[in-house]
Amino acid sequence: MKSILFVMLIISGCFGQKTNPVSNKKELFNESVSSIELFKKPNGNSLYLPKIDYENFIKHWNKSETAGIIEFKPDYFLNVNLTDGSVRKFRANSKYIKEGSDWCYTLEDSTFFEDIFTMKIKENSTKTQQ
Image (cartoon, rainbow, N blue to C red; front, side, top):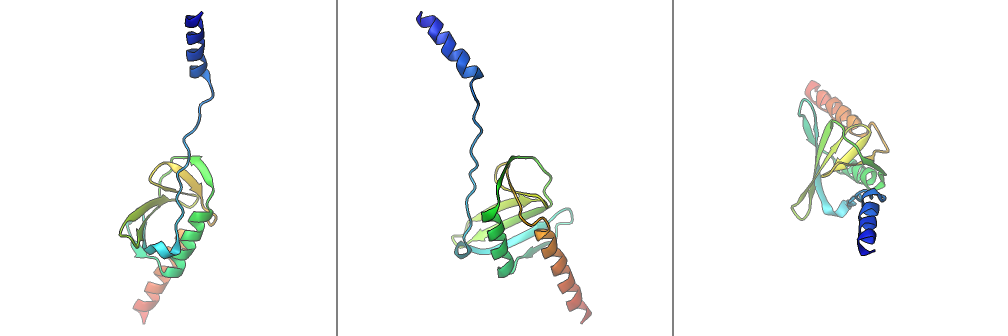
């Protein structure tokens, strides 16, 4: 009797409901961020976000919704430098962003990173023409 119960317990464990790992998203806070460096691939151009842009990024990150575990090719890489000296690293495309693991979060503004680069390129070309 005990052996039948043991076998049934093992079988039910094998075919029971599987749980997914839990997202470990950590919020960012304006006062804990000292700077954010944004890299664009494939050309590798980078820039430091002005305070207004990194505050907007923090809002986007904190409001982002979990999309699940998704593989994608990142177009952007972000180094978020914190006031305690640590760095949080993010990868993003126009639709998703992730930090550390493959847990993805949806971006509210799909043109956020591209708009920053486009604006910076226009600013730099205006400066060189003067």
